[in-house]
Image 1 (cartoon, rainbow, N blue to C red):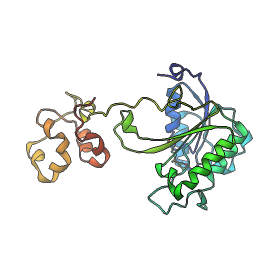
Image 2 (image 1 turned 45 degrees about the vertical axis):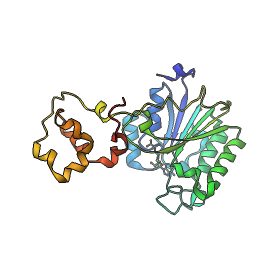
Image 3 (image 1 turned 135 degrees about the horizontal axis):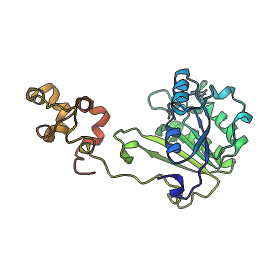
Image 4 (image 1 turned 90 degrees about the horizontal axis):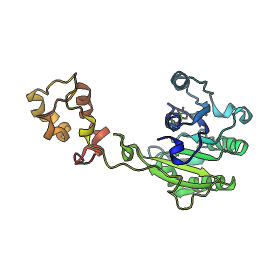
Length: 258
Ligand SMILES: C[S@@+](CC[C@H](N)C(=O)[O-])C[C@H]1O[C@@H](n2cnc3c(N)ncnc32)[C@H](O)[C@@H]1O
């Protein structure tokens, strides 16, 4: 599916706080073109440049908004530490990272992109009794955007990872009746672990009997229990099986879904 299938023209986008380029991959696959990216971490920046064959600017605080090319979509996965439940949650008051939203706002005010996609941890909506979110929402609405927010996770889209993230979308078009023309995408049925296993992988070897019976491994391999005697599991997938924290949400009792 490309953007045209959803009724959208191909557009230009920018990738602020670009990281590994998750937004870039998704929007490029939909047919859009990245015209600007910035990322403060040098290693990530080099990786981004090598993966996407374009330059990536550095610290957003040192960027002159007039140097950012025209674009229709602004993406920003801004740092989540101020909002994360894993820390003291200073929110927008965080002296180091809390003010970064102001730089996103600066780009918005200058470039007025048609669409915004911001990403953060789900707790952004609730941190400080919702004060940060209310402030962000009000600022975006003051700029004329209709705003919607939703927490989604890759496992709802057929990817074997549970990683809830909040997505804030902004549009000059109405979001009434959302999800409608603009929508979060069709959520998949839960995927089964079986669907990730090849029936006859060429690098497979049988699991030795004592391993499947080992009390140490039995807990980790429980989801494979029914299949391990009939299926050949390749070595790399066997390693996955030993990391149930990554997959546990996806593998429990889902072997029938596909
Ligand atoms: C949540 S991650 C973004 C993840 C990204 N969307 C991806 O797909 O990988 C936030 C990123 O912001 C970067 N960052 C933090 N402060 C920054 C700044 N002042 N200017 C540019 N990037 C910054 C961090 O290095 C980190 O990679």
